[in-house]
Length: 212
Image: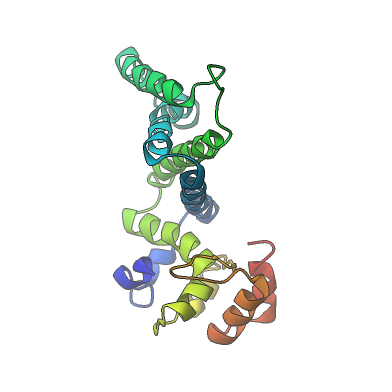
């Protein structure tokens, strides 16, 4: 919702114009996936353990930056990154003592997705302005969580569905099951809310819970 409050696509339609819509959408999914895996990790790991594993992100970015972006890391930065990565191994403890906790893999997945988010952010910055990247990227999170959260939080401003249709922005529909903002685990209810509250067509709702 923050993206719709700060950036109004009705008055600034250029926000929805991107030269890489697919990559922008995938970038947003990477950020949402990072958040999901982080929250899952917090259920099983202590906060310091989960956040320590996230420090593997610079190591992953450095590995991918060369072949994907053509930005190769020098030996000084590699040394600093390697020292930080050793700290991550101390936290994970693979093959030592009681072995690695399976829940640590959740934080590892979050680090991987966050590294992918950073790489794709760099990619889209070469063709799209920063305002567009911020707005379109946040739409992914809004699209997944908005239908139930809209009702629970008693929001009054509808999302700009007409603008999304005009620019062919994918609209996903899902239940969030968040006790604070979206206490609902029913996908059927979420689709009904998207249909009745937002005025999505039946086809859009079906695509929103399957393809998008």
